[in-house]
Length: 295
Image 1 (cartoon, helix red, strand yellow):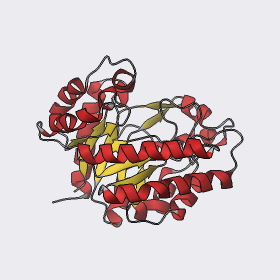
Image 2 (cartoon, rainbow, N blue to C red):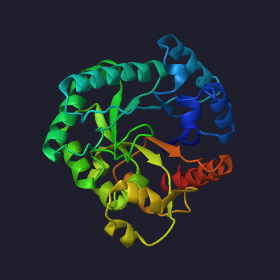
Image 3 (tube, one colour):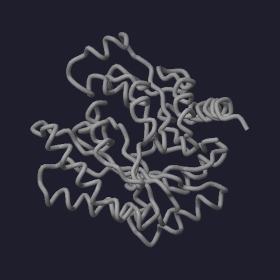
């Protein structure tokens, strides 16, 4: 059966910018949820000092949990080669961070969809950058996971490979045992795509999953898909909510994943409206995993 983790989506500013929450406080909040692990983010303030990485791992493992995934946001689509080289070195350092934390999976992104960036240039920049990180991943026994992402919390532009066709082409370009997909069904809605269609196209490459849900604030899905203006417009129409009460069909998603033998980590991105919703989301997902992967 897949294992269940959670990501502190509601506390990113507190953990990454103003320091108003400590990692100890997040671990203490999450421990009663009866999860298997806690996904971490490379930008946590307390992880800036490499010497603190082992203690951060012990803090989680002392609660009977593990850190399975490290969420990172390299910007590989920048047109300047020196900029991309610096981002590659950052990602290599994050790979080493992941390994020290005990994580077997380390996220990569494509980068920002800058206004003057062509599709072919972006694909070439990103594929070459990810491939440059793979030897480090192999040496550290870590798998890089590319997410169909919307936009990092601290970026100016949405994801370069946000749209399904660009994302799938990028995935097809990189064939390596230390590379796979982190599937997020809600982000497909933000791109105006069908999350099940995306999953069917990449399911054989999916090694981890982000679980979240969205509800429409106004209009219909067809309105959302016709809307001009890109992801910013989609984001205004959609709202985070309790998993199982939104647009995603988790029965269909889990059937697709089970069909290809998926048995890895599902990490929850919820709680932005309060911990009560996160508790409910954990309960829903645990029941669905038991239903689709019976003992």
